[in-house]
Length: 181
Ligand SMILES: Cc1cc2nc3c(=O)[nH]c(=O)nc-3n(C[C@H](O)[C@H](O)[C@H](O)COP(=O)(O)O)c2cc1C
Image (cartoon, rainbow, N blue to C red):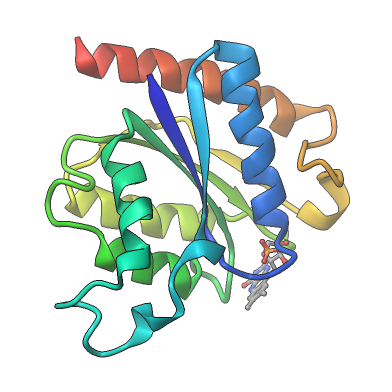
């Protein structure tokens, strides 16, 4: 089973990337599945070119291949201005339609500096992935006040969010197995 963990921002020094790296290691350590990180800093800069929709930059292809080879996607998104980052939407818009998401299992982790822990970006993503007929795993995880509750290694401090993450990782692997059956 191949699971791809998408770090939902390309911001240098991002906390999301650290959390996504931790989640990637959890899938391998806890569930023994192949898990790989997709880092949006790898998006080619010319993806913003007006011609990029028709003529995709070659450097996008490895990221496309990684998504298409995934049995499941974990989207780790920060909250930017009450939503998810524009870089993530651009990536979604540049992936092949419909095969990138059609019936592909997806689950979500939200994080934010604020009190609500990224529930807004996650719920907005659920609308997008719902539109794209993804198989959405309903157990979501949120990290509020992320600068205080997540360590340098991207792991949440012991407590509810850490327990929910353990549960989500286990449950999502089971969900993927069930949707394939
Ligand atoms: C452009 C930008 C907009 C942000 N908007 C919000 C916001 O609306 N609500 C919030 O709680 N945190 C907001 N934050 C804080 C991030 O959620 C917080 O920094 C968290 O670490 C995740 O972002 P990061 O992966 O870029 O570090 C914003 C951060 C940036 C860079």
